Each structure stands twice: as structure tokens, then as C-alpha cells.
Length: 188
Image (tube, rainbow, N blue to C red; front, side, top):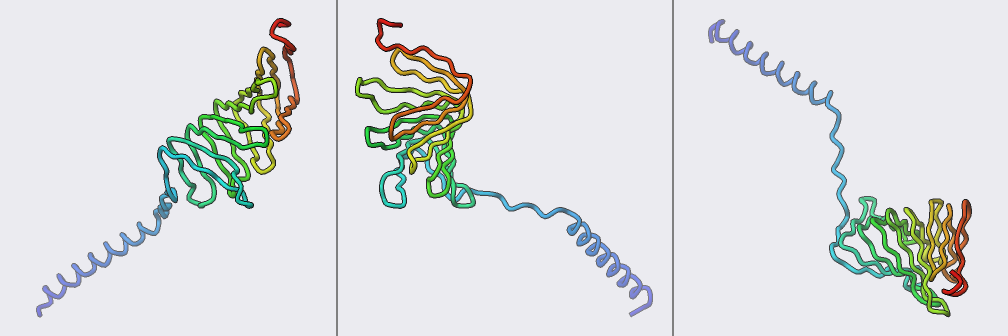
């Protein structure tokens, strides 16, 4: 092999090794791409009944879309319609979105929340409207720190902050309360 050919071979080899080294250096400088977060599963147009640790119904939900978080523990739901069983009847709830915590201990309703209690002895239902509401099915209670409007028959109440005992069908407004209590339809 002649000296010119050897020089050409060494030049091509040097260019190749230099290019490879520059490519490796550039690859190491780029931040590693994050793995794509994908849901464990997605349900469409479904009805689901969640059970508590004792095997009793915690709640039932129907929705056009449910997505289980990648951590495999919580659920995100769009346009849910919930039913929370109680001793004196079921509580019905709707919202724009909801998030169910692991083991279904808490249901966070978000956006356009509408909670309706079971009928009272007089047949009236109590309706709560707010922007967010946390429901704790195992404890049969609900709460929010947001503004709440309440209607029961001809009676109306509003306030900031709410605590609901779903078992006893009692509620408490915490701040800035106002309302109109009508004992009979004629009194309003």
C-alpha cells in the first residue's frame, strides 16, 4: 500500500471517528426524553359500582369517560353521575369532572357540582349547588369551602363552606350565610 493511500485511509478513519465522537457528545447533552404517561385503562360509556372494604356498595357512577391514572390508584372521570347509598335513600350527584381517590375513600367533584339528597318525610329533596365538593362515602359526609346554594322546596339558603352529614340528612353552612325559610308554600 502506498503512502498516499494510507494517508487517505487514515483521513477517512479520522473523519469517521470524529463524527461519531461529536454525535455521542451531542446525544449526551440532550435531556433524556420523559416516558409518555399513559393511563392504565380507559372506559367509555360505562356504569361502575365501587365496593368498600366490607363489600358493601360505596357508590355507583355512570359516565361517558373514565381514565385510571398511571400510578394505578386514582380515577379521573368526565361528566359523572354518582349515586351514594344511604339508610334513607340515595344521594345523587353530578359534576363536570370527578377524581376518585385510592380505595374510593374520597370522591372530589369539580365544576358545576349538583348534589341532591333523598326525599324527606314531606317528600322534599334538598339540592346543593357549588363549584367543588368532596364526598367521603364511607363516612357518609360531604364538604366544601366554596360558595354553596341550597334549595329545599320554597326555602333557599346560601353561604361559604358546607358540611353535610348524609346519614342524618343535616347540613351546616359555615360563613356568610343568608336565606329564606318557608315553613309552608303560603308563607313565602
